[in-house]
Each structure stands twice: as C-alpha cells, then as structure tokens.
Length: 211
Image 1 (cartoon, rainbow, N blue to C red):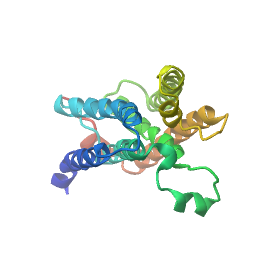
Image 2 (cartoon, rainbow, N blue to C red; image 1 turned 180 degrees about the horizontal axis):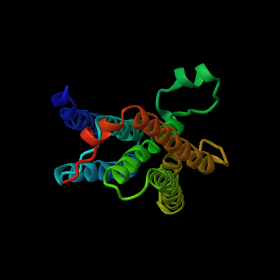
Image 3 (cartoon, one colour; image 1 turned 90 degrees about the vertical axis):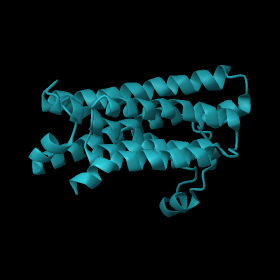
Image 4 (cartoon, rainbow, N blue to C red; image 1 turned 135 degrees about the horizontal axis):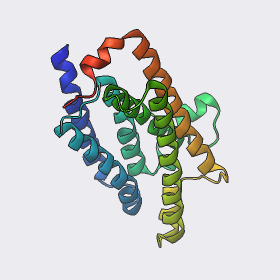
C-alpha cells in the first residue's frame, strides 16, 4: 500500500498529460484553450517542482488537487459553457451549464494541501493554518476573476473573451464563482480536520515531506 501511495502523484500526472494532449487536439476555440490552460499548466508545474524539491503531500491531497487540472483542461477544450454536462444540469433542474461552478468549487480543494503543508511543517497552528488556507483560496478566486475581466475586456476578440468569461448571461457570475471557490475551500478544510482528528498520525507519516 505504501508503494502504491508513492505512485499516486505519478499516476495523476500521467492522466493529466494524456488529458492535456486530448484537449489540445481540435479545441472549440484555440485562443480560449490557451487562456484556460496556461494557468493550470503553471499550477501543475509548481506541484512538480515542489515534488522534485522534496515537498510531498499526502495521497489524498494530490487526488483533491488533481480535480481542478482535469476539470479545467476539459473546459478549455470545449469552453466551459459548451462542455457536455446536460445530465447534471437536468438532474438538478439548472437552466445554465453548471460545469464552470464545479470547476470553481474544485479550486477550493487546494486549501487541503495548503493547510496540510503549514501544519505538518509547523508554520502555523491548526486554526490559523485552516483560516489562512481559506483566505488564500478566496484571494486567488478574486484575482482570477480580475484576470477574466481584463481578458474579456481587452483581449481583442469579443467572442473568445465572452467564452473565457463564461458568465452565460448571469450578471452575478463573478460573485457566484468566488463563492464556489470559497465553499470548496471550506469543504476541503472540514475534510482535512475530520481526517486529521481520526487519523492523526497518518499525516505525520504520509504527508508533506520535511526535507
């Protein structure tokens, strides 16, 4: 089991690379594809660099942090508004495509890794690490909404800008996206605290390396 856990980051990265290659073939809009994928590639590269430098997260943290790259890469291929997600929208009675909301919720999963790192490295107390992780995700959410606005307003291609923005006619789209990011962070922190209380020694053994 220990050997399999050590392979989880490699498996997740392989899946991402394959998904990236698929998404790069004939996307709906190449400009949107670049805009959606560049930030995610940078995130993945950051995790790879940290891994190579000896900073290792728990298997669950890697699994949670892989959701965003997967979801975002698919969204970049179709544009988030056009991802085939009708089954989910019909199941819950949504009139708009909610795939982008799922993507924003998954941003919050990185709060799990942030809190884990700060606590295992003893940078902050448990309470402060959890609060910091949620606030960090909220700040990232706000920053990304500003980037979307700048791209949509000044990107030079009105249609690509609208596709990247993905508001689907909702004037409160940015606020709802930031809310979903934050709710995802809260959910990730609650999960972290639940597992930490139940498996306290597991994170000391299997999470962020102290190298």
